[in-house]
Image 1: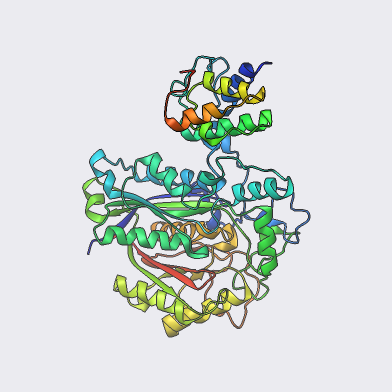
Image 2: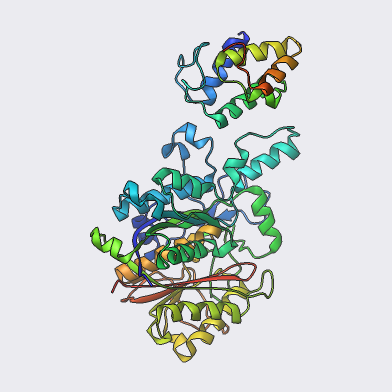
Length: 96
Length: 409
């Protein structure tokens, strides 16, 4: 199972959604995910992947795609400071 | 000043998950005290509690909702639902800012707290679930009930241990009485039967043991009483300004005549005579009721040696020679001490006594105690008209809440 599939599985589970409801292109808004739900999903991802997602990045995630991209970069050990800076600047995430 | 009436009742307790079964069990002296099932209590010296039996949260709430509802908030929502349904009340859009919720909780989100500590300290977790705070905060039940019924008026939580929901109902009564609201949902909920809480109570040495015969463990006012039994649950009442209720043709169940609220400023666990007596007199004074008009007292009656003797002295202090002729019962003998829910559960029992002319008994009464020499309605309900009744709550910490209710005039 790749990162994308895992993210989809976790969001489906945490939101108690029907299988298939979460697509790689879904936005949080479409899925009815509010800010508190988002925090819950991030917690589940951190637990699953044994990683820390910085708060500043976490707060800017608005879609499944953004989550997958950020996770991939964290998992590949890539520097994500540009994402942090971007989040702080209020600019849209590159995946938007 | 405005008149405040009760037009709906809801209860979710060890002795019944709705008003009908609750009062049927109380009237037949059926207790809700059993061996604890929420966790394995084998290592505890006290292994019993008044648990809501066979409770399956998913039978009442969708899974998504349950993620954020601690047990005490679930109970609050369930009792509020019955109260709202029984009142037949629909709050119109323009009335919502005059509709509020006041609920008590002594222990807050005890379940979530226990789980969190277990993960943090025992399992060495380095982070806790993000829903921990919204689940365990004391005001979670109030906020959830407000959202459920779009109540946008004055709303808050009271936390005064065993008096929490007495204070909640009393303060909600005053908000309507003084014109700050027209309709209030008021009551309380608690779910304190956790390993951590039970260990804490065990150390205070006020719990009845009774592992061998849970149903007989709590014996208020009886010479052989050994202490209290921890319970859980919720109760909610719908309070309405009298004209509001009358205009919509509501079934008026009782009137709240008075509320007495005092502090002992004495001792952190031992009650005084003066503080509670002053609260009882204040409730009588506000209702303009003479001591000789009271037909029934629902006692605080925890079942501890100290409380029951002291409460007897308090009642004699307030009612003088007439004290021995007033039926006094402790329904905690059956539903246990449900902490922040207990005053509300007892007020529901008191309103039903008025409604149905049946005084619920003090269960498990076996032997008179010279220090407790009143009429405790031992073991059998009594059919008797009740026009005016008082419900006592004297909390740990010396904070007293006494409610006076009467048959609608």
